[in-house]
Image (cartoon, rainbow, N blue to C red; front, side, top):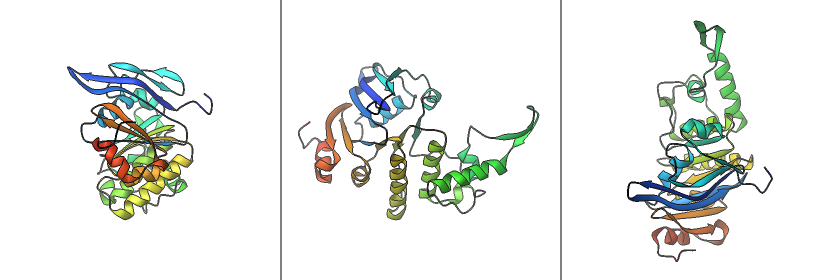
Length: 252
């Protein structure tokens, strides 16, 4: 891979559900340390595209490349093995478990001997989770706190931090600030900016145009499963973006 090789590239990706084309020939790429905003009205194909990238849906046609190598995902674990992590709106956190347990969910650390005489190493998990959260500027008072005790912004921060900790080189964020207040939205946006600055490629899917313009350098607008326009964030206003989403602006 070179500095000009995209971390993630989709080429003419299409997804059919019977006679319905949910995604129709979509192409875009995201570079290391870049954020691409993916926007569109409801039914534009955003969710289906995210599920293709994250391994939930195989594409019907077209190709996907990771760091210049063509890949095909049969499951979400395939996507994660290629260092793509997707943070969905529901965050995939277990409210009854504590912060550290959620941080290591599915990747728990054990101590002891063999398979029968081992137990969760909560001390190590809590220590490592605390260190990682502090490293990227997230303050959680107690690692032993259950997720149900945390604010929405803290939950979103944990989900994002977990993805980075496990070596994500491409992060897909699906509505990362939905249902958050202004203060928490700003805090999560600042965290995402730090993630981008660290060299991770980020794709943000959101209806929040202010968030998209704050984070992204380029914007891909979807309409009816197709790329309607490609915009450079510093060349358009929020009103321009809305006009492209609604089809009031001419496709570019």
